[in-house]
Image 1 (cartoon, one colour):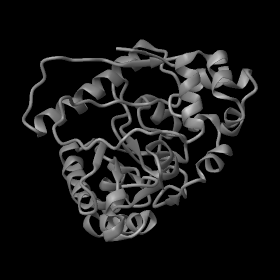
Image 2: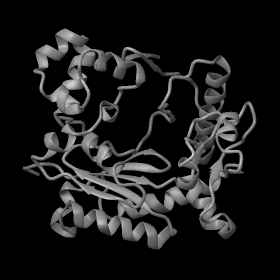
Image 3: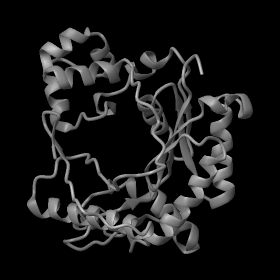
Length: 300
């Protein structure tokens, strides 16, 4: 279809914690932390009540307990979360077969070809939000844009239960005011490098030409910064019809530096992948690890 694409990024709000609050009325409105508080356990997710105290997903359980000792720690029920995720997926597939799941609680939807039937991107997003709530009793935040990256950024700006629409042609203006941390792949270390170079916002990156960024930060990072900062992400939504691999990854607000913390996260990721394999009746023959560290270096 000619013209700009219409991409939705749908992100369930505090998914695991929201399911626990839905299923256990006594937890509603309380600071729920899904995951253990022990030295070898990691927070899977935290309700918005707990996030106000600094508790975040992938945080070691001991640190979460230290930050907020009054939090309600709940053991994860991955089978339940997977079942609810399947219900949400069914809602998405009512509007398009171009659905790319990223995890149990988020997905990209390319609804470009669905506009003639269901309306524009905002109309479809509102219907998705309504039908997810009717089906599951849960809320989902949705970003609407012409690319995957901008849609994902938009979905995170008005949580929970948010809807942010970036009209075609408004991508650069939308991104310009946002902090550097909103650029994919820019963690604390890379952000510090950019700040030392005089950058404070995405708009500052937009002000530099492609060749200037490549000269300053290298071909890989420079090109990456230029493409994202200008909203030029051309990646297609890739439906997960015949997955040749099953994986899970986490991005951390702060670098992991202690070996025990890294080991704990690795155990959590292995368990998540194992559950997904068991759910689809598959077994793996190769295990691959991916590590991204400063300055934007990816090791596999």
